Image (cartoon, rainbow, N blue to C red; front, top):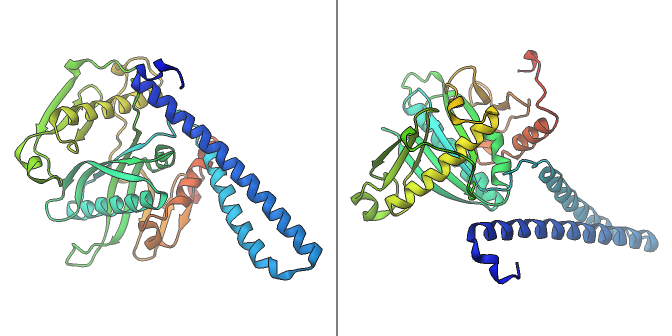
Length: 337
């Protein structure tokens, strides 16, 4: 990085700087843990030598914090994917069910933004479509921070809500679905050959916040990759050119992932991976009535504290997924559902 020519290729040099920072952070974390371990050992030895029981609360507090840091490091070792360290792009889509599904979509949006804030990540809203009466029909977010994609890929799939709907005058229990699509925000050029003839590009007026500028121009961009049915949208940037550039970046990342997952050479050999947003496809259920329970159908992880989960306490499910994946994604018995 000291070479004068290092910044000749800004994209490549930025990538190297980011990787160097990640390596430096890892070394610093290790050195910090090593120092804390030695400090705890010294304190325990001092307590024994001086028979000083007053040190016990301090030692217990240090051990508790040390254990938390070790657990966090263990989780990080499960992030072995090529793009796990990247920012994440998340798209939430309400399924059939009208206002109830749109409200569920807005609840998940709140859950994930609260989780991101807790992790110290920042969130940019790239595109949003409000519901006709309440809630959100769809929203695309960019979650920025180290390992954001590695953690959030556990959330890819259909999420089911069961509750007594506040929008149902009869007070009946209702089931709603929202799909969550996750992909890494890959900045470097990807080996994805996209035929311009396979794209349909639409412009529209942005519907989110942004002042007068956002209302005066049709700067928002929607790109459809016709062979696969993949659709990406962006309205966050100030110009149509910037929105198109970001949307193309998202499209390339999505198609690149599809190619990897399908293990094919050509895009023409794959089709979109979006499943029906409905019964039988859910990865996780959130039940609010007649009892309270959040259960992941892949890993079996569950929590009876629905309120905490909806406030962003989803680490339990993320860790369970990463552990389950590291074991080869073993199938669960039908009786475990």
